[in-house]
Length: 206
Image (tube, rainbow, N blue to C red):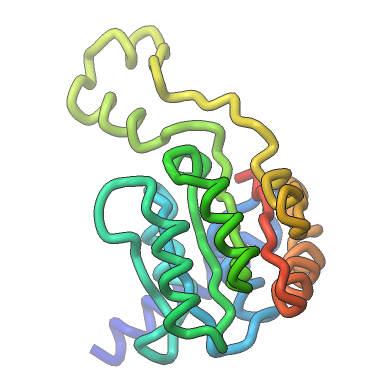
């Protein structure tokens, strides 16, 4: 088991090394930068779909309060994160959420409540401009179907808004991040905002 575990760790390290040289944003890079910038006592509330496995693997938690998963269905992540922040106010609460999942959430009420009750969240929107899991199941269930043969996936692509701008409604920090080289500074700025009691939203273009 020690050998298997070391092979797994080596694989994670290799993925993060490759992510550091990539010209596109990837979950291993995001989680690596989070580990480097944020304090060890952090809570991560995840409501991604296609990125969830890499997020879990690369966060490398040290205690049982580090990781939470929105329990069922989409649209619960932000509210769930507020509950975690209320229960553990001394911790930084990070929300990792897909752009599709973000669209399901009650964003305005969440941000309003967070501002009113001093519950700043650091929200990372993993933006791949699609409901990628829907495309995955189109291919899985109908490999010879029209969607696959014509490369035409109805209801999959998302021409979303500037999600990060939602933070401006409550005086929070907002930034769109496309270049991986800009990620460390963006997370540092977002974390600085949270420490001052203002939530932050980073729109990460995956």
